[in-house]
Image 1 (spheres, rainbow, N blue to C red):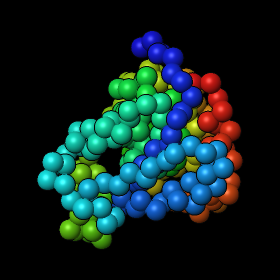
Image 2: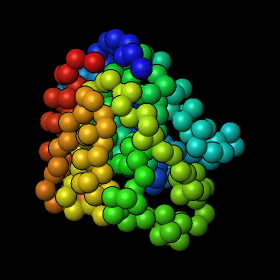
Image 3: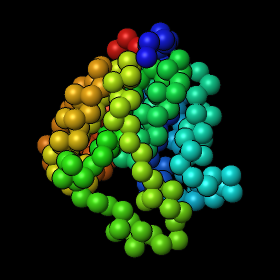
Length: 210
């Protein structure tokens, strides 16, 4: 796929993981505020205090929710399952998505082959009333990752059983303009717990030419 030149990002869109915690990226966003870019924290209907939406009934509906936010040059900053949606959005809207930041995600890769802990049974048991939009999703983007032509920052922790470093390494090999940064001691929530480390990395990443 030919990369369509994009402008610098005009705003930032933060995507949480399967918990739908819209506060997850707040510590990072606070440190990025000096850049002066408007930003929004997108929530998932029915998760993390975001009201349910009868129009959201499957994975494709979640993706459409993300795509609806892309009305101009935008950087997507996403964690875990939100990262899969971010990759799909970047593939579908290369004019609008200028930069990707993916933290502790599958990125659309099959996780079992990398020794990842299957989080889904525990998640369903702990949250039986939540919609199954994430716990039943099966998205394989392996064959499409090489089509990404935008700058991609991969943030991983070396203490994350849900998305081991090997997943980040595999994404770094598959995505042409990607860079992997491994944070010692970081687990699946590294973007929140290590915001002081993560924010400067994102700031530098956003300076790269789309």
